[in-house]
Length: 255
Length: 179
Image 1 (tube, chains in turn brown, red):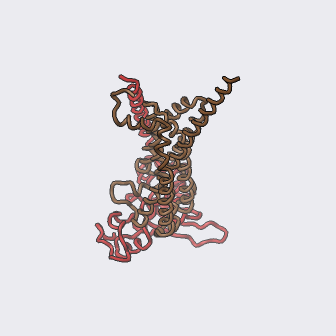
Image 2: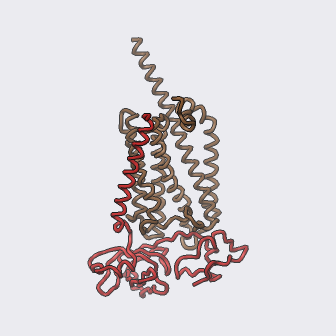
Image 3: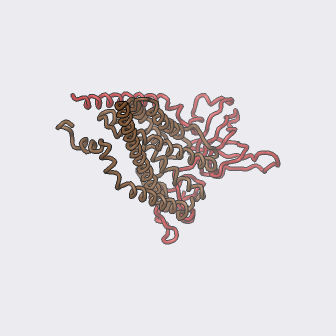
């Protein structure tokens, strides 16, 4: 690393060494899994058993405790993918490529769950499974971006070319994120505007808001630890492949 | 300029270009991206939408306007109501099953055609959920205290009720009383 590198970039590059990344994260994994499962479990109990029904939606409101965290993760995870893509394109950070590759299938699952739970809620409440309004359509585009990234990075024999193509796709797709977020404010849609993330007081009673935030924290931890575990597995897999190649070369040389 | 700096600038310029292209496209298609049109849009439009053109009409179900026709065996139930946005209201007739959330004061989006008689014949009625979530006890407390009549529209500002505990203390004085 050149001597003039800013300290932030240096600390990021500490994790660029895959062996050090495995060593540093190893003791944390069981604790992170326990924390993620514990918070998700507590949030699920609070949301599904303790919290009250809604005055007009009845028990159907409980779908929201999965739908909203998944929507936040679909968008927040995509911001993470964009940051990883920047790190990959500008600093050629090797772990950013691997993490992005392992992140996109998880992001696609979160977005699919958001769409599926929204559809299940929409049929009894709105009276339809699906409409082509700006919010629903832009989230569907987000789902295709996640799937497209997951497919594109795996479509090249040369992993580095795949990672570069995926990073460019992810950065182009970032224009969709403000459209998803603000579609309900810019245009009229069937989907309601934001209840929690708005400037004045949340339009949700605290008996529902606190379990929702707990669920959101739990699912976020679960999302993060899943991506971390997948990345660790990918690093180990790459190491196994390198060892096998080395053995094959030794075997060839001995012939 | 180092290679990293150059790559950063290229990405930044691409981002600005892509962002402004998207913003311009969305502004150009502004009118086509809306999901429904309000009664004011329709009533002030010149010319009025042709009777053979289907579009979506959205607004609140006017208080006191819902009339259900007596059910006839073997036929779908017919309901009359008016969709309003405060300034204008359009009468709607619909034959079919209404969604659970349909009620007076609720937002709805209806798909159909505006007849020459000024009546909107809907083939589909969807309920629109507003962004408020509250337990039934809190809604009852607000209604009892006269702070809110759901048939008249949106609830009072959330800061007046989102920490309300109906079992322990009376509703906080709202900014505006029931209208």
